[in-house]
Image (tube, rainbow, N blue to C red):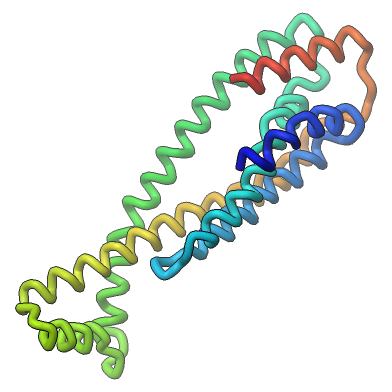
Length: 214
């Protein structure tokens, strides 16, 4: 994330002065959506690159996240209100981040039992009588010397692990839908193509730098 995000920060500052910031923000949140969808396909049999590779692209989106949104939010405000707006935006961004983390935890907490029951029904032959993988797995454990209680405990552990991963995937996929919606919502903002005077441009740069550090 760091290797790709740090060099891009300086480039984004310049692009925000020359392009419509709405376009940069839209591409940025779509990048977040694509990365979350990518990671959201992870399962227990996944390998290290299943996480490491998409996180590199996540670094690109992260580098282009704060500055464009800050520039879009404070664009058009009078110079006397820019610093106060930057402070309020930093507060709102911190609160929204905390809310988003808590929301993801709630999604994982609620979806994990659902997947646990669904996996038990699907693999235990309750949904399809011809598909009773848990009985086959239990027989193999018995053949290895596991007692009945040990076999049930091992199967329950494996199901809980996979259900937790599926719950995490659901939280990431929900984030995908949220970012896609934000990509469309961004275009309701005012265009930033119009030039501002030099004083307001300097104040905007100062406010952006403050929010970037926050």
